[in-house]
Image: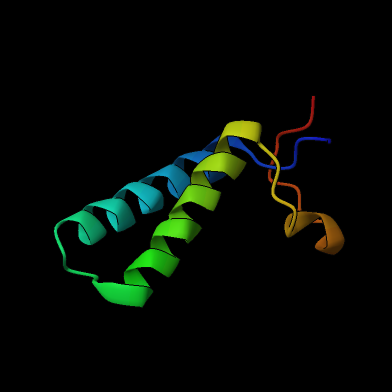
Length: 67
């Protein structure tokens, strides 16, 4: 897997995931929608940790800085 996510992209995803988690656990986003968004937040964190987004690959998007 070649990295295709830059630092800013990774930070933004982690922030969004944290916001979703806080909203879910404070019961602002309840029920099925909350569970779906929490799963999405988990995917955001996972892709941030490995610096690879599978949805970027088919479209040729690369936010990682070139060396």
